Length: 253
Ligand SMILES: C[S@@+](CC[C@H](N)C(=O)[O-])C[C@H]1O[C@@H](n2cnc3c(N)ncnc32)[C@H](O)[C@@H]1O
Image (cartoon, rainbow, N blue to C red; front, top):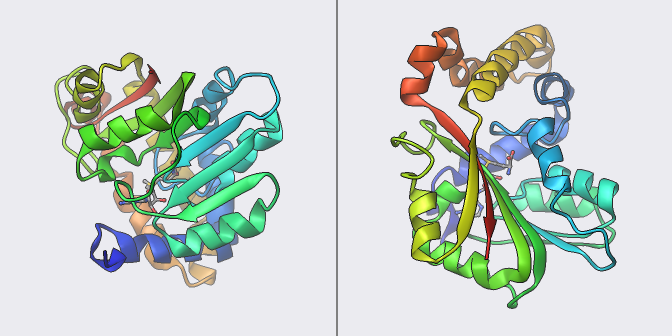
């Protein structure tokens, strides 16, 4: 498959190039999300810390991140748990950086959702923050994730509606929840839409605080993108929640 034909491929190559070079962006992430994981999404440090409770305290624990970007979330989880970290992403730029930043006890692969494969029962925890929507066939992809997960493993997903995909009624009507039911996977979900509204406000304030640095680095276009992305946080919460929702899913085999 020609990756360039996939949704947002060139945009993500450019994004991870900028994330590597821009001090303004790194500072913005730290301010907005509590930690710089080069987020192009909605995952702050509270959400990533939630994952820690699902990582077993034993030897040879393996974690997979679907849409791992430059690996910074995995690097953080490894620092906290000493797990063996695996990640894949279609961005060549991101995977190159991940391999450079986290060379120990790790495996980063350039791969496309729906094409890449791993052996059965291979991971204790699989995470996917703001990436599941890129699956062309969500049910088939969830089936693959189920296969990769160990018997008692946990699949942890950060899922945004109203950004890449439209909002549905609630956490049980999303494309993901339907794919989980189709695959007989049990889940618990929590609604963090209100926290996400507050996060988007913080993103906007943090971007503005670093505007001059973005401009001095020649990254005015990325600053403009952040402002565009957070426009919805200038509305009231009532208006926001009509269009956007965020859920955390904790899924078992
Ligand atoms: C919204 S970003 C989320 C990145 C990171 N997980 C986070 O939370 O900040 C989506 C990620 O998925 C990757 N991606 C998008 N479509 C993909 C596909 N079809 N196959 C593999 N990776 C993909 C992008 O390169 C990007 O790193």
